[in-house]
Image (cartoon, rainbow, N blue to C red; front, side, top):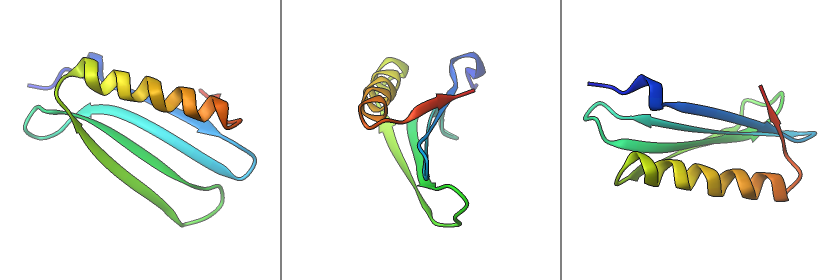
Length: 78
């Protein structure tokens, strides 16, 4: 049911904050872009789930988020 090869996770960090984007399928097989952000060494943070019409739409959203993170000085981590 799940296309695990198409899932992706990317993480960026700045001096005090982190930001993650995960492209994955929900329990019904629909594609979702999940954004997770918060402060480093802090229990506070947020998670946002945004449904997408297709895998391509979810990946396009993730690429847009990546562009914005780079503009704001975040560095991608492994």
